[in-house]
Length: 430
Image (spheres, rainbow, N blue to C red):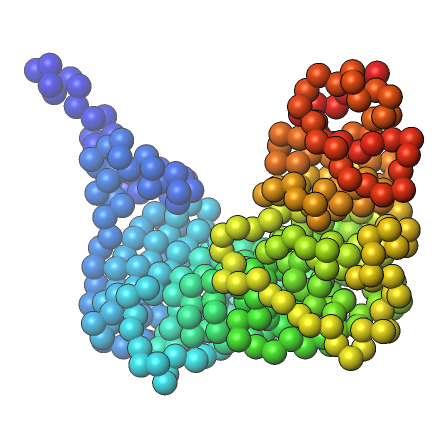
């Protein structure tokens, strides 16, 4: 009797009620709480279906997308399996990791064209968030058709698709967030007419990004951490990427791209566009050198409204540091570039709106300390500068150095006599 009284009350609920409860819980939380009840754990166990064609695969996924109930299916087709999981609030995960294909058939493109005739009724779908993993060419057309029919998608995430060469999205009225990561073969991402797109995130090798009629984009992360990925650097393509995101407020970039543009002879201060609304900039650095620092200094000429800056050194995830030799057009650049630090500092632009700077992964070598000095010089109204969440940066008169109790490092800055720039674990107050 005692064991019966302590029986799991959730397990006593009818299956319909349990499915309804799970349909209200986000997918990550559903996986976590499934350990609390044997009944809920059984809900997480996938049902298995054997299919005979891609058309049947498409029909099953479409049927799942039109249901509001939590459900997981494993669909078997030609010795491969697809895991489909529908979570709360229209969250659908499609995992094609088990699909194998011949290397000669691996390259494909994903085309999503959401065109709805005014004379036809749109296809009903509860899908708001779609997560696609390991799409192959064998199912690429099926996925393209499904995505095109789901006009309600607000968030789309695509990852680990080894054969995916291009993504083209057209006339997506609801799409607000797009994430693409770890797709090594991708060469082009095109968004045409996505009026409500607010956030774009890409992680992987360098790829051409084209944005057409995307007026409300506010955040973009272009993390080209894998370098060129075997491709040749194209200066015009790189500038077109920057131009397409010139109106955003938050941007993430890889430092090697900025350095490559400088090496190619680009003069940032003379470009016909600026990041006039950019307030938050994050730069991912594969290495710290004088060339990296000086290139970044030139880039700041087109970010006059910058308020917050993060410089992050990536020790992991980078296949190799990208090196670019100076081109034959190097003399087109500012004459002070890559000559001496004092000249670079004298020509650096002043960022009067800069309020906060964060630096992570820095070993505090000479080039890094000079970068700190340069940023202090640029941020004339800077309120806070933190390195690795430990060191705070401040200017202190030489006569007051003996008053500082915390540990500190003196920055070897040039041509400064009245103040020493130092790094301490707290900002001294005098």
